Length: 344
Ligand SMILES: NC(=O)c1ccc[n+]([C@@H]2O[C@H](COP(=O)([O-])OP(=O)(O)OC[C@H]3O[C@@H](n4cnc5c(N)ncnc54)[C@H](OP(=O)(O)O)[C@@H]3O)[C@@H](O)[C@H]2O)c1
Image (cartoon, rainbow, N blue to C red; front, side):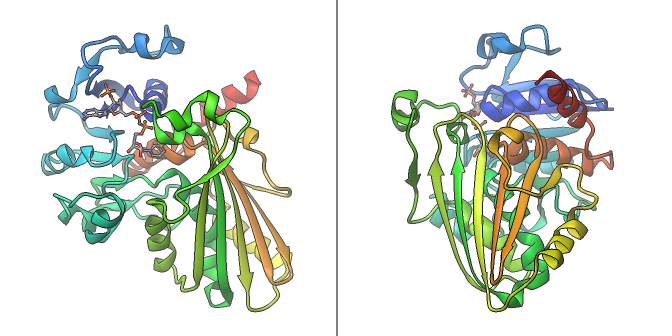
């Protein structure tokens, strides 16, 4: 049994972490920490949780101690740098849901996140925790950088192809769509219902901060081709939908590609390979990533869908905790999926 600290527990991803910790068989207790909302009651922020959680006190990050075994960090970019180095040097396990430790190269933080990294020594010792990908290694680890929401969808969709067919890939074009919760709970005019209802728009077309993260991981598996990544905002609260077009220098057939994906994901309980393109509704409020791969001669179209707050953040973070402690990766998560499936 372990004790868990949830830093940033009053945000969108924090809420999901609380729900998962609450039902996890090996989380004995957890405490919630945050900034402005410290001292208030969790139920004032999440009335839907009334009666469903054990601990409703919101503690201040200023009172953070080393009493927990593992810390989930769900803070805005840059903020985790204030806490993670001390947690690691005190021997704690950390799963960071933000982007502060995902990139391997310090200089990329200046370019993409507009700050200079104050604990770049940890970039080398962390693992990039793409929990559903079989080759992700958890040996002797303390710090897991939980992948971004878009990178989770893109990498789970593309890595099997890149690992097995990289020499045939001419180019990859990713067109991705996200619901508005991807930006967190802070109010922004462009995310208001009156702006987004009935609307779709592309954003950060000239460069999204998730692009270097995606390329970093693809290149490690042999990717060396042209790549584009275009993000859009959808008029829904939750969900990411991806269409990736992979152009090849020779024809492949559907059976050989199916076999590649089946072999990679045959032991991944949260990956569902689909015969038809998935729909967002199939995965919202679950930790599943649904993927369809359709071969059209020299072009492969991959469509995939995830819940950005769960598979793209908190569900994957709990999977990473399970893997760090050597537990079944579904603990605390899959029972919830089954329960939800029974409800709807
Ligand atoms: N939303 C997604 O789909 C998603 C997906 C993958 C990864 N992520 C990443 O996960 C992290 C959390 O995202 P989110 O969407 O949950 O954000 P959010 O809804 O904006 O919540 C942020 C949390 O951080 C706390 N906080 C903000 N500034 C703070 C400070 N200076 N000191 C202490 N606490 C502070 C907030 O509490 P107070 O209001 O009380 O200060 C709140 O609990 C981000 O790094 C985000 O990029 C998000």
